[in-house]
Length: 188
Image (cartoon, rainbow, N blue to C red; front, side, top):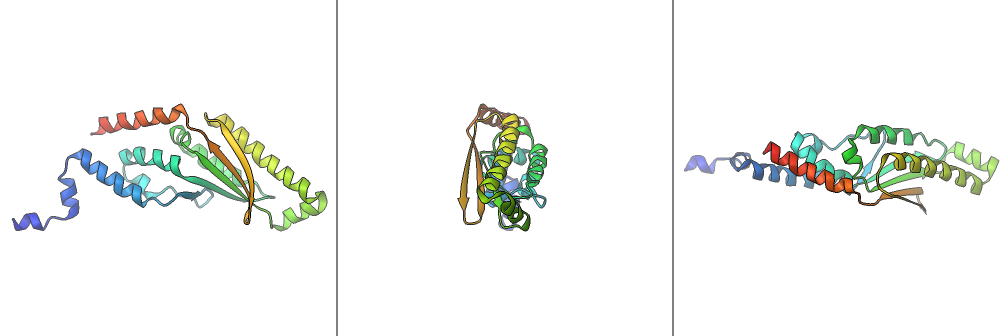
């Protein structure tokens, strides 16, 4: 009887049926994933919780991509961060990127080069040009690679311009959910 009392929580969890063990692991890992805001850029790293094992990655990644707001910070005169975004976006599986619902691009407008462009072309014209480039680039990229309708809103906040891309739910979501359930059954 004393041996029963000395068992750790890990031992007790491992003694459960495999389905319950996986469920406990998923719930525990899901609650520790940071969010809801994710900054996409050169220092981006996927949460470690998505790298525990294949089954938990499949289940957690679907919800992670669906429920996060992805932020892309960039300077108004240097919009190459969209290249970093493309690189990041293309590195993910199509099933996961289809789940993305919200992307925000923060355009900082206080750099020296942007101020120089404003002096040459005027504030309104330069902002229009920059926003046109960003919106057109993202619309064409997301429109070509994402099956959902894309709604782009441009707002001004205290930190800079924000471009919000909100994707509507798609059939891919239901397909991905079925895929997760099928893989879960196979691995159980």
